[in-house]
Amino acid sequence: MHTVARSKSFDTAAKQAELSEDEIFDLVTYLAENPLAGDEIGGTGGCRKLRVAGRGKGKRGGFRTITFYSGETMPVFLLTVFAKGEKSTLTAKEAAGLKTLTGMLVEEYKKRISSFTAKPNRSA
Image (cartoon, rainbow, N blue to C red; front, top):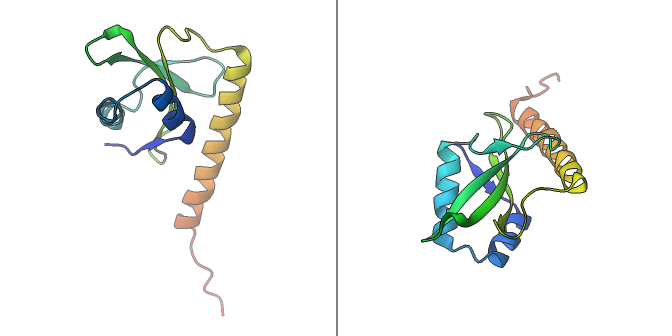
């Protein structure tokens, strides 16, 4: 299982889309077991779009989530969510923004991991 991190933008969008805590829990559980779920979105640095059925609505009345996963050393990031009828594709500007964001996430996690794995300087 992988760690799943909810971004502030995801939480805000989930509230606007009226996702229940149960729906979010189910999504997080699914992504923890399937970090590469969904279709990769070109031009975003590796983000994926996952179709999620709304409770009692099926996938046609469901949601789309944008996630990012870059490998074993990083969590799966829940970046945003929107109702299917609200948006079908990302604009070029949105895709470019996601590409910038994913690059920053990878760099930040590389720094954090290297600080845990760096050997202390024991020269005295």
